[in-house]
Length: 262
Image (cartoon, rainbow, N blue to C red; front, side):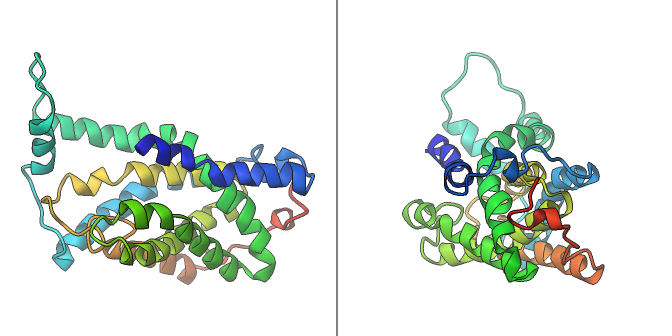
C-alpha cells in the first residue's frame, strides 16, 4: 500500500509534464527543473520541517491531546510483533536514535524521488498559473486543491487520520493550505521545484520525531501530526512570522509568471 501511495505522488508531476509538453507545447525547462535558486533556502527546506514537527510534539503535550512516553512503547510493541530474529536486536533506545537520525539526515533526500512528482504539479505548474489572481489567492487555492487531491486516500483508507475518515478530509485541506503556504514561500524565493521537493520530503520523513515520544492511541487529528490541529499552531505561527517580517508575500520576479519561465 505504501508503495502505491509513493508512486501516486508522481500523478501531478506527470500531468504537469504532459500538459507542458503536449498541450502548451513548451519545453520541459518551463517547469524550472534546471533552476536551483539561492542555496540558503535549501537549509530551511531541510531543517524547518523537523523543527515544526518538534513544535507539534510540544503543542500536543501542552494541549493534552497526547502524552509523553519516555519508554518508547510504540516501538517496543512493534518489535514484539515482529518475527523473532536469531540475532539479538539493539536496544529500543538505539533503534529509536537510528530511526531519528535516518529521518533527519538521509530520508529527506531519498523522499525527493517521490515528492518531486507532487511538487512539479502543485508548486512547479499550478502555483505559477494561479499567480495572476494574486499571490495569496494562488497560494491558498493551490494548497486547497492539494488537500482535496488527498481525499480518496483519506476517505477510503483514513490516510493520516484513521480515526476520522470524513472529518479527516477537511483537516487535510487546512493542513495542506498551511504547509502549502510554506512550500510556496520557498518556491517563490527560489523559483525551483527542487527546494519544495526537499522540504516536502523532509516533512514526510519527520513524523517519527513526534510519534516515537507519544503514548499509543492518540488522535492524530488533534495531536502528533503536523497536518492536524497541533501542527496547525506552529505552522500558523511561522506563516504569521513571514507576514510580520514582510517575507510574505514574496516579491516575485517576472520570470515566474506563466509564459515567461526560462
